[in-house]
Length: 311
Image (tube, rainbow, N blue to C red; front, top):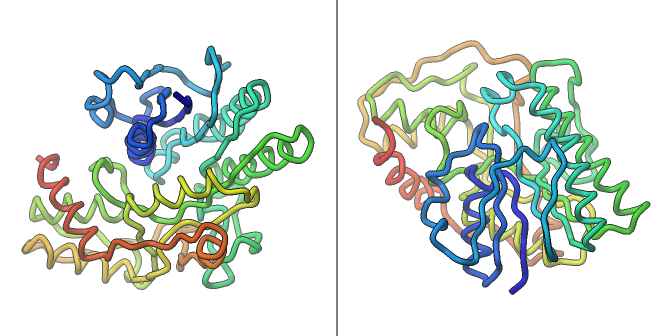
């Protein structure tokens, strides 16, 4: 049985990846320091013989006995509310954590896929964003700890590929949603669902005209899986190019939930991107991938989850 190491395994994306690799017949070694992840996301996998969990911070030395076919590095605070509270940890997991895992990949001859982000583009000056765009990032702004950690992650990953010949893959993840998102993670859709279910005002920053492109988690996992198994080592955008405004997203959640909530507008946070839309030409051409889950369907599935966890 081939073995795969997944870091950040107790998080939203990491736990869905664990499910996928178990389904594909792999032995999954899950690693998380539970800083933002939750064992609730993995509890259904714990009884399985082919699943192992290590409570460990990848910013410290990582040792995994035995062979490893693949490493997927998804450990990191991933929402603004988290990385503003934990700026040092965010930088360390992107830098030291990535360095440690690339060392494991080099030592074991493993292929490693690292989770980068659309945030490497910052507040973009081109739209939609292609992989060739170098970005517009404020390195000393409040979001810089996350943006620059991920940009460094990409740089050191390419260095290990070019200098040491490590098999590497880089996925640039755009806004993703679905079951297992934390209610309090501060991102738009979990916040909207929580507020709508509680009948509270829906908080929209700015005038709500800023855009995002929301990809359902099952589609994203499929794109990541295809990229891992591909022969392409340069960054690939994986996300849904169907762009909507934040105000529209809030209105769709209110309509879906039947909530009486009103939209309340707040000041736009510093360096908040005004637009976000992936150009997924490479994903279509190289991976044969594009999202399939319609937003109405994805939101309905997500609502079912949040109804069970919002108190």
